[in-house]
Image (cartoon, rainbow, N blue to C red; front, side):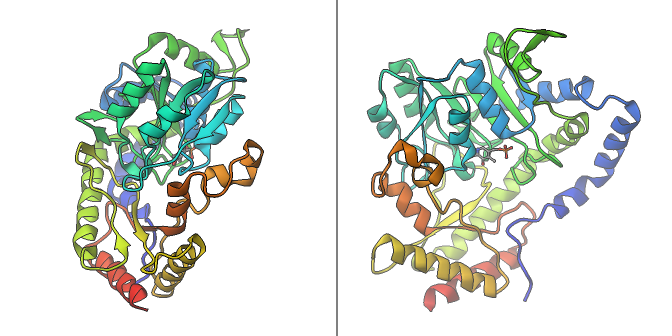
Length: 381
Ligand SMILES: *Cc1c(COP(=O)(O)O)cnc(C)c1O
């Protein structure tokens, strides 16, 4: 029995090791470690890849979200509508700029924010909406943009898990007013450390973002506003340049892995496979199934069953993950916002049922067969 990890970054590194070593050593020898031509080149290449006029790189996906909101002057007194079924950074950055996150429920099939729920949550304080293309699955940008336009809202796409994903032929991050990306190592385009980027077509916003990420200075040592230090290292920039050239291939491999899971899991009862995007292209940062309880009992029973399945897989050497076990509106940090259990029922139910199976481009078919075999046994218990 082989141990199967949730993901394995070493195989990808082996493919590009020669190129990466050479490029990193050249940066080390150049003496230019922060900023410089390699960082600018990556910004140009990334904007071209996403299909926006500009990309501004920064220190992380979290900073990308924070900087985007700062540059849009979103702050105290403003509300930003987002999903509770996401990584905490999506909401945390809304709070970090002084605004208030407003959580609305998600679509049970796509796990993404529901545009009707967004429309229903708009108040005169609402400034923006942050859809998350969760697990690489594109949110319904057509409906979201329509709601946003009708109410004069800004759309900030959280593309952290979806570099390369498309909605109706357009890459995510090029559809809303700004796109925020993460280059955390486990994302589809991952650096060998932290990194992030903001994409936009708005040149004014770009000037503001460049200033904010460097201590609020447009000119050296002339500070217009309070900024932060959030830059991408040249070493990461050259690694990302190399990886960007492989990204479409790796995303295609993820697609093949997802298709194989779909086929293998089709006959397995009580396992609901993720939706296949019909109006776009999912890039499968995660392959997340739902373990449903046959007796449709309460949430705790659903959670217990999912956790039992996960433990069984673990005992069989198969790692799986729960993204995310507690929706953000029920997190201790947001207790003061006053949400109650039962208020966002889809997100709360998903939190009890989801299980992300091993997923990475190089995952071999035999390993997938082992995962599904273990899952079948777990369900049959
Ligand atoms: C990873 C992630 C982030 C944050 O990115 P970092 O680079 O880790 O700061 C934000 N939103 C979502 C949905 C993410 O998955």
